[in-house]
Image (tube, rainbow, N blue to C red; front, side):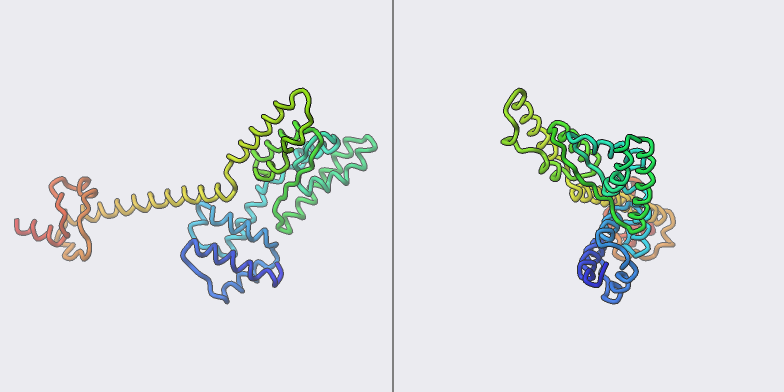
Length: 291
C-alpha cells in the first residue's frame, strides 16, 4: 500500500472494528497501517474479510498479527491449483473452441512452455510449465497477491456454458460474471437445435442468478455463527443461574442479599418443584426461615 491508500485502509478498519462495537484512535490506525504497508490493498481487504468470518479468531477485533495469520493460512488454501492440475487446465489453450478459466500464473507459465510444446516435446513442455508455474505461484504468495481467475472464451458456445458453470460451482468466478459471458439469445445462429440452445442458456442464467453472492454467503455464515454464539451464551447463563438458585436454596445463610435478582420460572422447574414462586431471593429466604 502507498500513503494514498491510508484513507481507504482507515475506512476498512473502521468498518471491521464497528462489528465489535469498537473504534481505533488515529495513532493506532497509523501504527496498524505501518505494520501492513507492504501488503497490497486487496490482500488487506481479503484478510479482514477472512478474520470477521473466522469462527475462532473472528470473535475478537482484529490485530495486525491476526491478519498475518489469516493470510498465512489463506496462502496454503488460496485456490491456486497444484502444478499438475494447472497443466491439465492450461493444455486446453491449444483448442480455440474451448473456454478456459485459469489464473495469471497459468497463463504466464503456459506462454513459457508453449515454445517447447510447439516443437512437439510435450514432456519437456510439461516440465517447463511446472517449473515456471511453481516459481510464479511462490512469488505471488510471497507478494501476498490473491488468486485472480480469468476467462478466455472459445468459439464453441456449448463448451462455454459447461466451463463457466463449472467455474461458478467451484467459486472461481462469480455468477454475474458467468452470466455476462454467456451469448445473448439474439446472437445464436438459427438452425437445428437453436431453440434448445436458447432454452439451455436461459436455464443456466436462472441457475446462476439463484446462486448466492459471496457477500450473501458471508452474511449468512456470520448470522449463523452469531445465532450459535447467542445460544451458547444463553445456555451458560441458564446453567449458572440454576446453580446459584440451587445453592441459595440449600444454603440460604450464605446468600444474605441478592440485589436486583428475581426468580426465573424456567429455572425453577429444574431446581425444586416447591420453589416455583416469582419473588426475590431475600423474600424466599425469609419465608423459609419463618417456617
